[in-house]
Length: 170
Image (tube, rainbow, N blue to C red; front, side, top):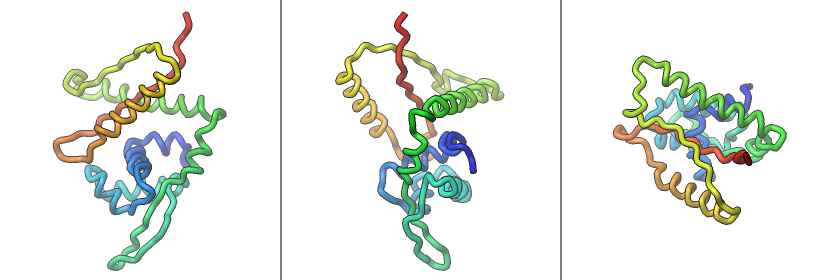
């Protein structure tokens, strides 16, 4: 079995989890249709990894024209088990190292072009009380949902990360 960070921080598996989170259940074939820029064999390999690591579970199986179609669901209990205060530091480290590795690989690739590829880093300290911050997070969630389009050949995947952390009180 892979570590939870190896499982969750893979971009294809993260997209599968995001699609599954928006629905109660979905067939593997539906997932392949919704993430159509990833080859079916690759999708099935990632689905298997998520099942093997108990992130997805099989709700039902149905025979269709000689093959078995599985309906899948997210295993919220397994995800919650890994999302604890005790594992928070390790999870954050894995997340940050994953982002670092992607940027390192990008900038060391043959022809990096941050302007053309719209690569940026931003850090903003905002002054908000808890209610204002909750409204901000709700608005941000709404924007992320609003702009979560399905794949077409005119769209490309964009990896956007947002981190909320305590500001230094210097």
